[in-house]
Length: 351
Image 1 (cartoon, rainbow, N blue to C red):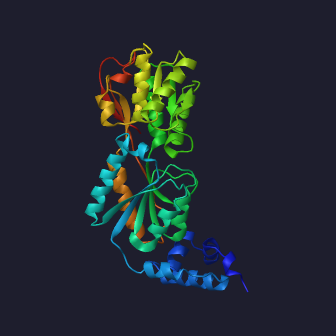
Image 2: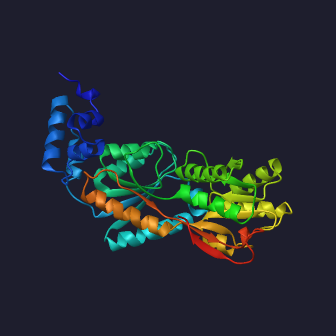
């Protein structure tokens, strides 16, 4: 006799030849699964002696017409800039267009999110939009294991099983770096996003690629977060250690604006002594003195696409993970008018 306490959902999925998410949805009672798949999972569970969660099956029998927006980030990171308000604006518009009620959840400081997970898996919402920068986030793993329809904002690190929408951070960063080189800057450095975040990693890879293609030695520092203060601290450290740096690519506009204050406080001029470009194309970047060049990403569109993918996941749980990468483009302003650029402002698509 098989010990049912040792049997996990992943065992049932492997025996049935389906994904863990599909097996979980079958055993939780979700109806939008084909008869053949349902039979295979049920037979596998019976053969292994897996005990079905009857409470979850009952709760899954009806739709709430609601989706959740789960923010697993410190609140200071969310509202200190323009990124999350823009993202929420796109999500809200798309939810309204789909006639879905939107509920917002903030993860409390219990790290694993166990209390939040218990609430979210009790049938209050039909699916979830998740914002997290945590590598191998246990909340995401728990939600997927339970069979929830989840779409992540940004490429999640540590799993290939999640649906997500992201922007082309790698290509955008390469375009930003090449723009500095094209304007005549010879020693551009990079203030990278924090380690173990997809945006930070991908933008750093793009910078490194462009520098190596140009035959130049990369110079960069990892910021502790994407904040204004981290940008100022990073710029000071780079300029002290590498005083011949003549340009900075910051992995986010808040980082770039912080770097701008540090560069100007050091007595250097922007763009004559140090060129500066950010990533986001936020309103504060355009309003800075001088206006800061940046890589545009449509944060509102990212939010809308997250909702669209989630609606698709809710309608068809057997789909493979849905993954979308949105394009970026260069917006050149006065902060990168180097010796080769003259006095014109331009905008170009990052392709």
